[in-house]
Image 1 (cartoon, rainbow, N blue to C red):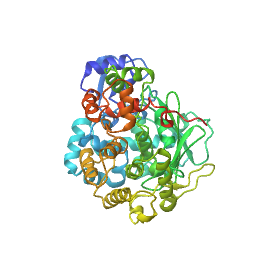
Image 2: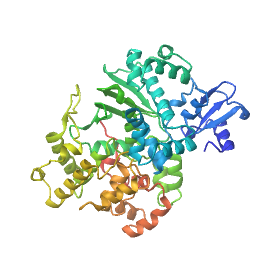
Image 3: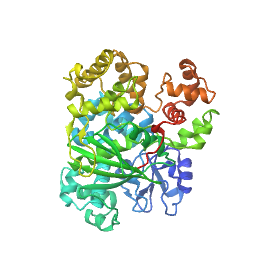
Image 4: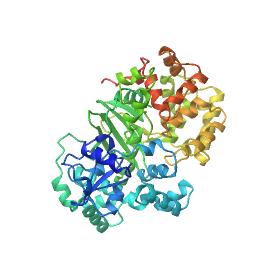
Length: 490
């Protein structure tokens, strides 16, 4: 979008928050860059330059605006919508791959050469993977500087900087302030926070309907791994350097996020996973605008706009849970998953809460005794087949995975049918166009609205919902009075 100057100027002049994260406005006279909704008086169009990423604006010599904090705007929705190389790379960079494994590690996971990746990212985003990762490190550093009292040396290494010198230089260059000045300017957060816990605000594009989003997560929560407590969804997180516990609560203009981490180097990755879990980078105006064009769906969208797709923080975990949930009730699926967790999960401490374990990785489940599973023999075989494929690396469901290849590999596993494939594509792979036409609840909702309701007819009709069929599923499911569709009450 940044190449459409006229459209960008209109967005800036109207302070349209819908475009935050889509592009960044740099001002030649002040040498700062802003989000489109910046509250200051808009500059003259001749003084505006537009960039596709904060990293590109930084590379061009602009610093972040102190008023609108463009580095903290919602991410671009296209990285979830798209499935090409650039989108997969951006999801991996947000997860911290470049900081942990360097550009060669990013290239290895994507199956391309470092040169190809750098060329494509530079062409589309105006910055290569190192610059994009650097911009993310700067934002992580800012969060730690402003929300903790950690010594600056600890902040530097927790944010992923190789040295205190590079940390100081980057913060000065990006924010035009020294780290100590950033801390002094930060408004103190007077919310009660447990010592060792970070209190953050996760932004999103409005509207956001929390009912089905938090309702689904709470109703399907695995005992010991997830819970609803004190108005927040809480869960344990298995992270590259350690583990964490997060509490997420909906607010009118943000998601309240409380994070406790055993290693602060996991901060950026933990935030990225929480944003994916709640689908916070979605563009509800685009999604709802298209779905409203169907007269059958329009009343549902108008009644409760801004529905998101509840996703996951761990794709492998969700794949295991999807198989456990085949042809059983929500309560039975929770029971099966809870047994696996108690037997094979890693214990954690949660003072004052009810979380007890991390969900076991596929490698820990690889030696599972099938006789210990209280389920039909065929489903046992399916579960063990999925676990073996995940543990061996034959099946890869991470944020950088090729969605169509993952679908094909899933479908090739015995006992994994189209419903399971599409549920995993929707919630684990984050495909906004995933669709489950054989789902009984979906077909019942479609029939109640006078829409075609046989699988074949639903597929044909759903063509008008593309590329947002996963969101259409959420609106249709919400017609049922099931706990997954209601925000829990304490």
